[in-house]
Amino acid sequence: MGSTIRAAGAVLWRDDRVAVVHRPRYDDWSLPKGKLDPGETVAAAAVREVLEETGVHAVLGRHLAQVRYTAFGKPKTVDYYSARATSGEFVPNEEVDELRWLPVPLALRLVTRDEDREVLHAFAAAPADLRTLLLVRHAKAGKRDHWQGDDDLRPLSPAGWRQAEALRSMLPLWGVTRVHAAPRVRCAQTVQGVAEDLSVEVAREPRLSEEGYWPDRDAALVRLLEIAGAGGVPVVCSQGGVIPDLVSALAELGGVKLDDGVPCKKGSAWVLAFRERAGGWSTADEPRRWPQLVGAHYVPTALGRPGP
Image (cartoon, rainbow, N blue to C red; front, top):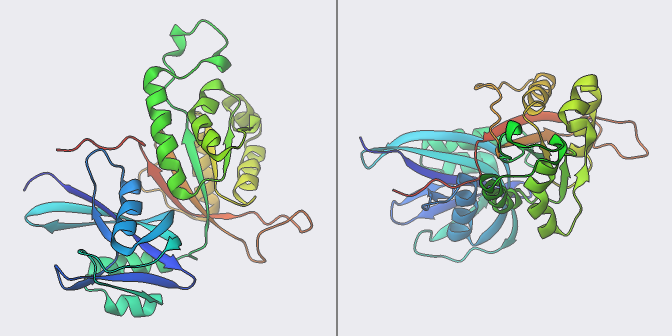
């Protein structure tokens, strides 16, 4: 068997319905999906394929599942996200000649493949309108031993700037609206391009730096939950000495199992999905109800994989 075929797709939703498409080439009913282009990330491919097959622009949410099977004699993996429809309308095209918006129970009956039913079950296991927070480790900044100045001021290396530009392209796929960073030059530089594109300032988060985190881990955890519950989609850039412990603590509180531990490469991101507690999201006039983590997915790099 040859090299693995990589593909991505989504459960596209609006209101209380999901999109199921008919592909005349295979005469099947399917979730929108397709193969990655050379140099493309899984997340970018999911958004592009949704647009190409349905005509709908979408914002990604939580990662739902990775499905594995054999296609044309080769192993194939398809990563699926939840994706909220934002604009656009379906027009029949060469790949898809019909689209139906259906409640999940009817979509489960219509789709052809068991793999799609598996993904729909994963989608239905949590509310569609979860809050998303993107927790990013700063990009590469060279070796500490080679920097003679204050370590807080150590900037990104050329490789780090490439990672930052890749994050600048990838993070908006989740509809980022706010940008936060630990008070390190390298943390701020990693997400500065995202902030510039949004015309917002990078909010500094002292409790999410390494020396701010460990003296009072509970206060740092509360600060991240405040950011998650404050509306919109925040990106938070922190450090390698913080992120694994922070994600582990959130997972323990939310009852989320992390099968592969908590990796944390430079320039990587955790896509964290939160649900509101009973009683709704808190406001300044209500008692604090902390959001609960229900999903955590690791994105090891924002750099697309090279083509064959």
